[in-house]
Length: 298
Length: 304
Image 1 (cartoon, chains in turn red, brown):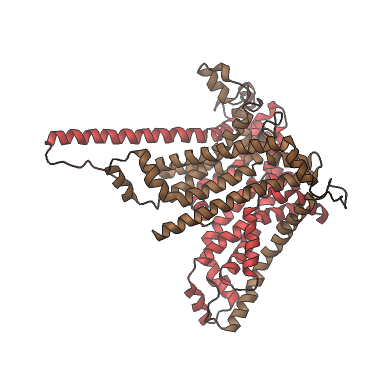
Image 2 (cartoon, one colour):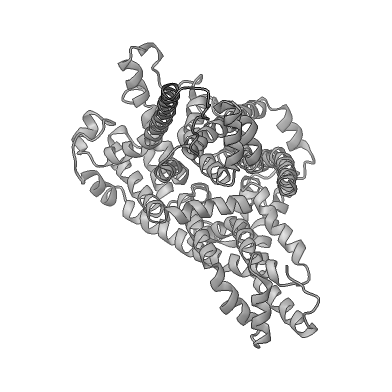
């Protein structure tokens, strides 16, 4: 978008040149102001993250004397005490045990269901799809209390299986909806050609169609992982005894402590957000595009 | 999509079989972990369940009448209203402006990276670090205020009932803006740049171009983010629970935290359930209304 001034023939060359220079000045001031605003906003956005990192990596003495001062010293002492005394190593393990299985199951079930709802006519398809998608409309809040007593009566309260099942179910509506959109976009001809070649229906799904939605499945895997990794309410409610405690619940539990514990708390927070930042930096394009296509399709 | 008339009956039967097989897991999980607890929520709302009694007494609509005559409900609802009004308007406005600034300037990828990060962080981490920023003694807000001579304004932002809700809200706005920016930025990619240039030549200033040229073109996407942000405001829980737990003195209590404390701290399971149902009943009409509007606008966009 370069907008040059419209030259008027009646004006002299020097007038034109002056007009052009004024225009350039106006334009670059605009650009400078724009970047100034953006840089300020970016600093504001980034500051809390820098604060976490800086507090986590200071010496415990510096944390005590000036808890939130930025980068006054460097030490792994807080990380070490969070890892051992603060039990963050066990929280990390529980986070993985909650996040990895539920993410894998969500991808598998959503891909299967997305294909069925997009391309396979079967009795009751529309009705079942509507009920599944209703889950997008109804907040988890509405049924979280009955779900607590249901899990208790099923013997799944305070168990990783139960918490995994809840995390699976809360992600399935979106997952199914998302994968269905990807399968719907595939051309009919592919399916027909494979059928003419004698491929069975299940083979068409597994070997022809599924590989074509792998980028969608990968994007879904990233959001599901993140949403489960960040989930606070599910462990709070359904893992009440603290026998299993993922990072989010571990952090929350830690905040009850004295202000002396700020160093390890900052280190624990850092441990919790490191996977998020790594995913974000490594898969930046996929994550943002996936979020956008998910949002725009949804 | 799906059934085609020239598919032979044998294939159709095979498709139906596979379809049922592939949809079975989602149907089972949805039935057990969504439909069944939803039905139970309705049942809990008309009995008086304390979490232990296997046959709780039927009380009809008593939970509902109690809810509507309970001042705490109205207080929480008022806080939800503040939360929804400011917590929707601010990210929408800031997100839109930031997106337009990135879109019309250069270096988009770096900014996109920076602004989106907060949206991906866990609520607990956000709550903890903002708790430090609001800290009465060492917090950065008070440090800055003291440094510029506004010592009189410094306080315990989360501990003062007058400021607590706004302090938590500011944190939530910080966490949401990047998401709005990202989605609007994606919509701006499809904007007709020639229209913007034509408006500029016709002498429209930046504000007029934004309002009359850019906004109408991205309206369907704008409404979609509006819906997501607005509806999220009804069921807000994590950030408030983590930062203030509803306090000080109920100053930040919303329906979500009130439902949680009723059910799990006071063992009034039925009352908590009724409060949770209220959240849904309030949120669903907004979702439907905005979705309709969005669909109508995107259809018009296709027709034009």
